[in-house]
Image 1 (cartoon, helix red, strand yellow):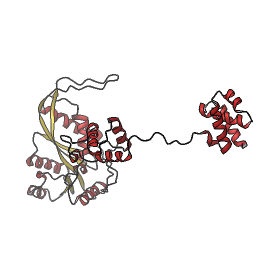
Image 2 (spheres, rainbow, N blue to C red):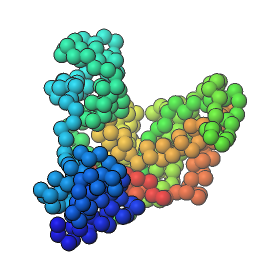
Image 3 (cartoon, rainbow, N blue to C red):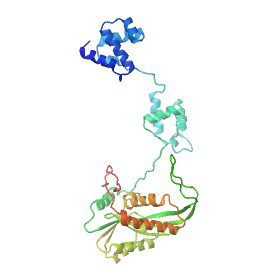
Length: 355
């Protein structure tokens, strides 16, 4: 036995960190190298003589440190054939209605088991089906919302808007305009209870409705300031009155308005509006079903999470006062531009809020 291997075996046999199984094998190898008989090694190590004979013969044949490790074993033969795994994965990646499964929109473990039995005559337990799906990183019971834009000019429109965000024209003002409709004035029967140790905060599920309000807002992408108007309706007249306020807030220079394709955003009324204000306004429309390109949607999300989500309002007027108070607070203390990183390419980084 080489001296280097003998030294490693001695260290493995004496080290307290060596697993007991490997330490026992190392002692057998060391004593066998010193010329001990199998019976004497058995008494000293305290194992079966067959174990001594096995590891003595293996070390004598290979004389390598790796022989102390168990050889690879084939293991138990699989109970479920690989083809059945493939059939199950194929089922999970299809729609239930394609396999005559009534009244189901997504797969469950029970439905997958029944469909697999009908198609392959193989019956698997729910646990086995779960193991196969987990191994393939499939969760067919989970569904996420996805919105596809059918606009044939999606890419050039998005690139034009992103260019306005990242490289606005010199001396121009870029505003993101949209309406947040259906803000509900909900009055909860009992106030929300704060959190306790090992218990989340609690909100009473019973509430009373006191009407809705609509917020029309314009976000300045350079400063983060918001111009707003809150009222009971969202009509063309409301939007025109709001845009007149915007024109008063920005009386000089070109103004680029980024908004969606709502019907009140189109029409001759905006040509007349632009003529009244010297042709300074340029209207840029987002692609169809792509309102996420409008930066004010990010601000609406902040408003929803911080003001509307868990609040309780006794009236629609109280809702309006609270929303407009938040707008004033935002403009005075928190107004800042969003750190927009999306440049129009599909693999670009999504927009994020500047901390």
